[in-house]
Amino acid sequence: MTAKDFNDRMLSLGLARVSEAAAHASARLIGRGDEKAADQAAVNAMREQLNLLDIKGVVVIGEGERDEAPMLFIGEEVGSGDGPEVDIALDPLEGTTLTAKDMPNALTVIAMAPRGTLLHAPDVYMDKLAIGPGYGPDVVSLDMGPAERVHALAKARGVSAEDITVCILERPRHEEMIAEVRGTGAAIRLITDGDVAGVIHCAEPEITGIDMYMGSGGAPEGVLAAAALKCMGGQIWGRLLFRNDDERGRAANAGITDLNRIYSRDEMVTADVIFAATGVTNGSILRGVRRAPAFIETETILMRSKTGSVRRMIYRNPIR
Image (tube, rainbow, N blue to C red; front, top):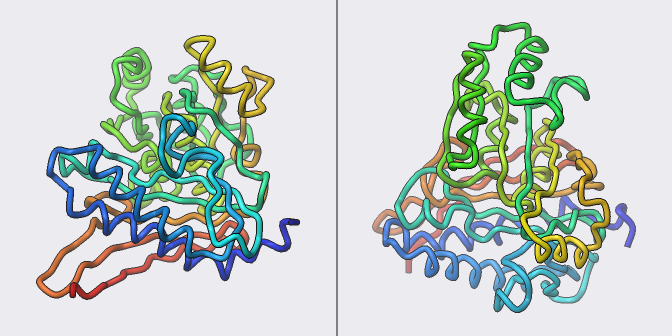
């Protein structure tokens, strides 16, 4: 299949249904303290809906290796078997802990692109840096230190460092980075989980107040974030991080030979992509699932990079 056979307009609403189904399924477990059950509910619903789509899909970013995940594992074929050949990147519940504890910004997330156009990122860490739209190509880079990035972005915006807000995942490994960023006078918004949402914040700084994301997190989530920014605008760079030979072996199995390569947004997602995310818990990007006596309501963001369209949809489903 060539990229021109990828009918993103026709497939996009189907992708939204997949995301919504996962959110519905996990909603009953919000605040119940069971991360695994919430994730499994989302996985089951997402897989069921994916198999209703007329696609020849392969999961390239999923729940893990085949021996670790019973379904939606990397390499699993999904869809009806008819229609275009596509890559699928997904996180059935981005923020399992957030869901279990009823904390903000839990999402269901999925992206689809023509076959062979999404980076097959292994399940390792990735050093990430992201900014919103409207900047030149070399304003900031992963080779800069955290303080240098803040000052460079402030200069490009024509503001002082004190006017910059950086989103960082709150982890012990980021303590030095956090201290260096605060040393510039910049503000930091710390998040406990959910770095796909963290990166997406950069695309709408006028709404979210976030100018830049930095820090290490999951490489698969980096590809999903790149798919979102390819639709919304903005830049992201990622460099895989390896802690041992097993992780380097995962990269080799994924076909990655240059272990030090820095991937840009368009190297992680090399063709047009569609992206859908549905809110599970209330957050700064999407409203969470809302239950009423007669219906359940979700909010979904659906995006297409081909047109740059960003559609927000409220789906109200009667409870029978």
